[in-house]
Image (cartoon, rainbow, N blue to C red; front, top):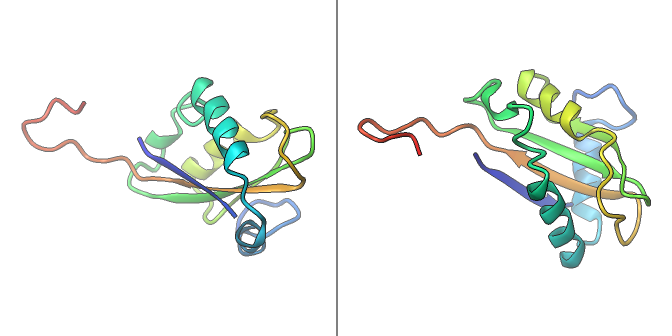
Length: 124
């Protein structure tokens, strides 16, 4: 399973993916906050807990999380609408992460397709 995060459509919220992605690209990046966010996300296995990678496993999806000043994810905007993006939206929406250094904080995630096991491998 692979998740790539970088700061920087389908969700029926206020932003399209194109708009959210552009805001993520323009927004300042804070490495210290990124480390705190990664630690919280990985410690709670948020990207794994609901089995989202296995839904539409051959497809990579991109998401932008909109995080408010208290650290709550107020919006999750995806580049495509499929079972994987819907699952990740449910996993992240309304979760409270550590408070960001400024808000709104736009966090772009790439939820990679699952790697197929190679012939003769144990799949680990």
